[in-house]
Length: 243
Image (tube, rainbow, N blue to C red; front, top):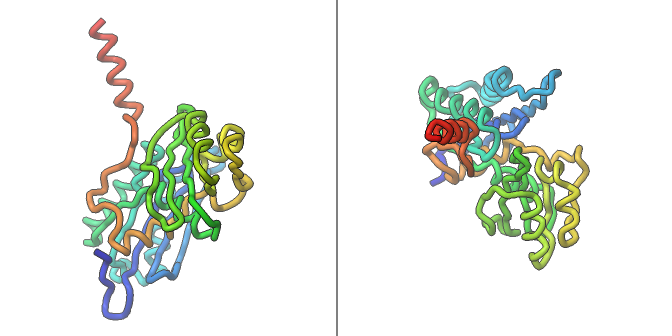
């Protein structure tokens, strides 16, 4: 169910995403972007999630008239960086308590796919995030926004094989498309925008919009698609002890 706004108009949403190396935040009202922040890596080449997220979120809330004017908090649920997801989701949960505002979670792949659609490209859209460990997180969306491939994690070579079988090449973007450009562009006429094209980055406005429409999840559970490294290490240690 869509979020109901106040007496003065549509709902105000403050949304953010920390699943990728970017720290993205936005204040959004009825399709209008009131403020938007997108922080890249710091001077040491590290994400600014821990140091920059709260300041970015506060800046967006101020642009919306303060927390008393905000109706909903929206947060990207991943898939993506385990550490980044913990920062973003913990921040969203903290805001629901401190500000007394409801929160909804949105798939980061859905947000990336919406960004590809916003560029006006026809046909299907493939969102590809760098999954690290030599893998990608991927989902395919139809021209109408429907999910055609559910979010999955796979090797880029496997994705290229799957793309070679589609009837028409989709529009492709995301950090995984940049990293594995060579593998993907060899599959079925795929063309990927230049590395600097903003379509490759998750914009927080695409976290806000579906949350305002009642889409996403109210549970704020992260979307991992595979076990976090810490869990893999525990499993490895338990096998070694068993030996």
